[in-house]
Image 1 (cartoon, helix red, strand yellow):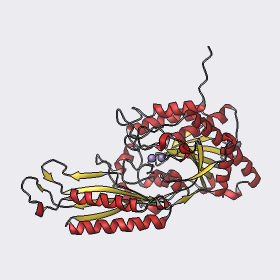
Image 2 (cartoon, protein in one colour):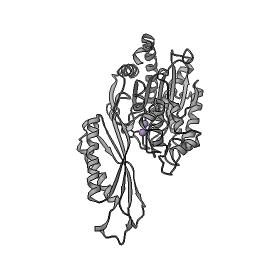
Image 3 (cartoon, protein in one colour):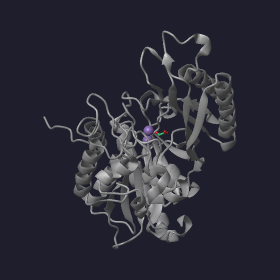
Image 4 (cartoon, helix red, strand yellow):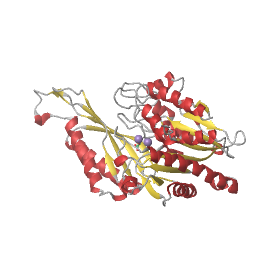
Length: 433
Ligand code: GLV
Ligand code: MN
Ligand code: MN
């Protein structure tokens, strides 16, 4: 019996699965791949080898982004840039971010096998810190490439931020031979990049519900994040009278419920969602009234107006609770991302590519999840392809995709490159500049 050949989609899924465990994860029994950790470094090495096998030259930039380059028909041609992120949330799924990088790699491997070149180069970037799962900021390395790092967050402001082990960004970079200030050297010249393309699992249920493998993203929701620090008073759990307490945790509990209530009251208007994803108490022991609590807020919506109205309500509720409970509050803004529309011209090409490959009209949908494309949109025209995932589950080890859908992804991305090339030779890139 002849064994069926592995398809590019099957190989891509197998690679993502392989990267879901140590040494590519920093934890045993779950996937956690924070920027610049041992799992991240091992992952960069593995993908670098696969990139070389696919005919690419490989480098890491000054922000530790991994970049593979497949030359065009002339040397030093500007590049069509594919990308997504290599990092993961703690106890994350194996395809969030990684599949976009690995699927793009299969597209290039196909071109390499057929010795196919284009009037532009193709580059693939594996970004370092899209999730913000190690340090309390996101997409520093994407900002470095887009050249907006200093504009958004002066280098001095992020260098001292710490991970849960107390390691600063500066120290983590130093271990990789890099510096916060030096990260700005990762900035790409606008003339060198024609457009940015990101394939990503949908992380939502729409495509599965409609029986579709692929979708084209019209834009990405606006996002704000805060870190909240509450300062009450620690005391003996056995002796401190209830009436005298300034308990930071009970204040936080009220605040968390207020944040949920404001999100729910939005009634799904403009896709408003509000989340407290992390909460830490200090000193965090059984017989001490909690003196300090730190928690996070993540608020998103399709429009700035809806998101910012919810944020105003949340901050007002937090201030009222902190005053009533006599607990001090520090509100530290950590992220403020505008909604990011995709480029209509590139969307039209991606829609044609999806229709050609699936034989169905392309479903266009909004992304509630954040992506590197949000930052790249400030630098170059962007387009995103969504891939159906099981039950819409993501940021969860149960994340799953069908390898047949990944085959469709690879075909659609390949078709997109050809359509882009036709368009490029017709317009000599002018419409995308
Ligand atoms: C990234 O996955 C985000 O949407 O927070
Ligand atoms: Mn994610
Ligand atoms: Mn992602």
